Image (cartoon, rainbow, N blue to C red; front, side):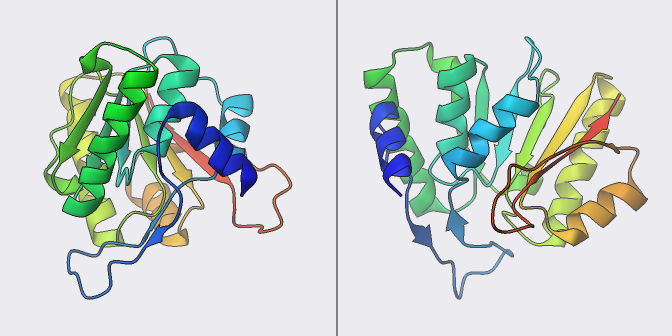
Length: 199
């Protein structure tokens, strides 16, 4: 917990805690930030390309965005469909910007449901920490594949703490191929990253 607080402070953001979305529709799962320990493991084992542009679907308060931007300097986009959580992300962006100045276009926050987000031609890395149900995940992935058809490029999907249903859908219903599994001795065997690639 100390590491989580210290890294938040270093970045100038507040992303700890859990937010439940009980009683809300649209298949949202609760907000819980990806651990910094996991993100460090991701950077140790997965190579982001120089032209990487990451989209975090269900970005929550923005931890993945700000951490990867700070460490790698890559452009990042956060898509968040809960208004209260989106406002938290905006506040974090302002405080991160004050502490770590950068061009505004480097970090973009979009308030919309993930399945209506329009994939941009240069977006090529897509991050999911189980933000919503399989129905929504399927629609988002189909949008990603449609973008690939219009603008072919290498694309990676990164699943953190992957739902088996997410994995099965990618395996059996898309041309995404399993590329990499990243684990780091976490006590929970399900705490890992799976990377699927389309190229």
